Length: 220
Image (cartoon, rainbow, N blue to C red; front, side):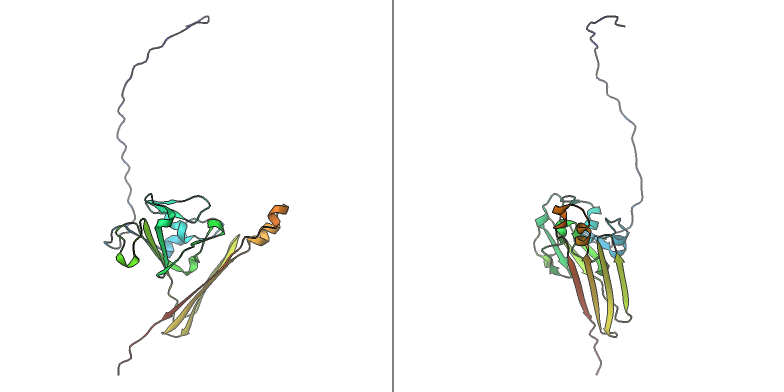
């Protein structure tokens, strides 16, 4: 005990303490659907179950839940795979190269989630058909419109609304998938009582059209 100002030296000794082993056991989902190495699949059901911002499902950001995939930034539509940069990824939609996969500076994906059937993300052993990419290849597939019955679905969100229709043109032969999406962020910005904000214009509209033709061989 000290009753006045003074110097007290306390000597400490190193001591190693071994903690008990902690074992965590959990059953993962059986998501192995093929023997392709470095391939992850996400279908539309899983994408729709992922929590979204402002009620808008994001196809690109849903891939961030996969191992080895990280976001470039909070307000960016790009992603990094296994330490690579965003420009080392190839994004395809029905086999067509997509050079700009986002809208409004990365806040929204360029793909209508209601028109997407699923995506394949190759993080290694990329098939030769996709060419050479350092990091990954993301192949997004659209839905196949029903050639039997007319179908439609839509959504109204805080910033965007969308509508997707499956139209049979010639029954059993030709069908069209038509999806539209638009934002009304301009209207919301004009309601903000700040002169600098009222003059800002930030909006986009997208239209997705997919034609499906079923050619049947007629015996002669």
